[in-house]
Image (cartoon, rainbow, N blue to C red; front, side):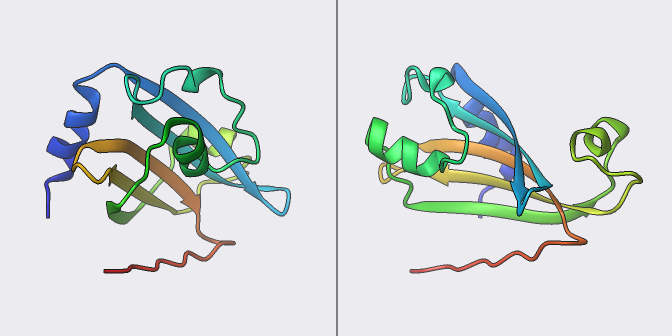
Length: 130
């Protein structure tokens, strides 16, 4: 298993397209996601409308990038005031933080993300394949 800080820094060694998105489920804000994609792999991504679209689908269809594996780290965190405001939380509640580094078939990192999930009203499902 790679050290996530060194693997994430590999993504940030290059110019990146940085995305920050709020996601909702059934009309309720559930998730704050910050993503970095190397800019040389996805030129113009910053101009792509991503509302109600899968970033992975956009990367595959528009840029021919296929993620073949990812490493994820999951822990519980307390949100700061700004995160509570963004997620429409009246008071702080524990969030699940997921950090992920996704790789292409050549082993190069294609994406780094950090997501904060409201866990009081959501459930995560993780499926792995070999």
